[in-house]
Image 1 (cartoon, helix red, strand yellow):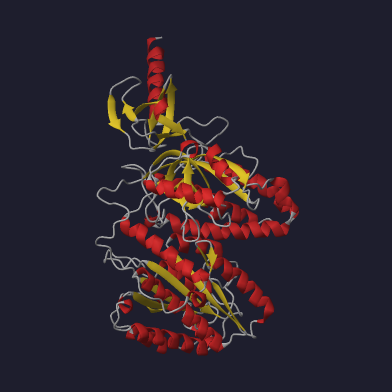
Image 2: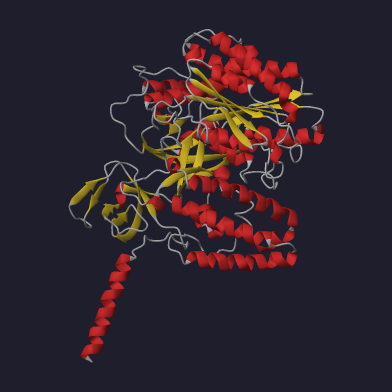
Length: 636
């Protein structure tokens, strides 16, 4: 009997020890994988026990997981996989039900947005018959630090652009309401946000120009170097030569930098192409641009045909984003404004084309480029050889690729006119050099009507990003407030982009699930296979659920439900809402969804292995709990 009791006691001790070692945060009600999270209010303190002494002062809006609740206290810790480290008063924290953060967009095309104390005050402005005049008055008062009674403003968007990709700030979305904008009746989100920069910077004040370095630009040409492009390459060289001649020996000439990449197609199928992509001239700060001109002069077009009319232009763009040294490594002085000019007479290889290098799509490439403050500008030569069908296909893809700060930088050259091409290329390059002139307070070479509204606005956007980086601009320091995701006065422009603050483990889970879905989906050739598909998916999800790092719900009825942290976002996708009945209905829909998953999976894998993407929310955070503010557009 004694031995039996001793054994039971030992088992009890082992069980308690095991449970302590495997301590997990509390789940949100009604969920299988979503843990309760809170954000600390300013002044929140950590205690070693409920009502115990203070052991730490928290920074404002630090995300914490909730492990236990005891009266007016919550037991908290920063990590899913670590033990709780103390207790906080419930009144000192705010519930955070979705991992959504807001990211300010570039305000070059709109007014700075006001952050209101409550939802009613925001609605009051949205529905005011004299909205523009009232907004101007409130903006002026906010800038002057003046409160205005019942319609006061708790904060205001920074004057300069804050790039969340370069300097993560946590502006959590605490609540949201889906609504229609009174001006155009399109969908908007009214969001309750809180804000504090992740890293408080001491000794840096917004607005000071002391010791500000000169604004400089990088222009990288991505050139189609296949057989049909010889005369256009020569014309591009002439544009570049005339530009360099004009700015040589001037202060502007020291601030405009050039590079070039050539692209062709799959050399495995056509070895005579010699290369798929090739860096013709790296992007460097040169006193003498002769090496760039020589690189253009030495560029020869291919002597053999490519497999098909479309070329692998996306491979060239991908190299311009990833391989070109925009940060000027080692110098500590990155290129400020970044322009890629694509020149081609062909459409891009579709990611599903067997001759395409990468499975990444134009939407994912565009999002990655804009996240790095790179604008892609496309000069599309609509030559007679391409034909209307190819021109329409290419235009749709390149328009999507060439978006930046709410505008589109796609320039079609009808008929492939060489003179028209040279004229447009000259205008683009001159407008970019004018961006430097404006930053220096100098007269531009192009008049406003010659440059056009889009290129002028692009210059403003680039300068706002540059000033934000130079001045150490941070997100506004507010306690809580309400704001619209679309600009109040111009709802065609996104003002605050909702993003998912996703951990590396969560993204790895998404990637593994997509990889399995693609594999199983490819095997679903007929309706009978499609019925079996969901049974197989459930098996895959059940296996993934056994891995503690994989937060998947094995009881979900939809594919999206397997990833519960995506299910209640203000985001709609075919995949997230897909159930067994809808999957069986249409083979074409299945094909479209599988292709889309493959493109997103390619981007997720790139991000997972890019250390610059990930940020630790607390000291000592394990690799899997580092986070990234992920745009909704590239969710599954």
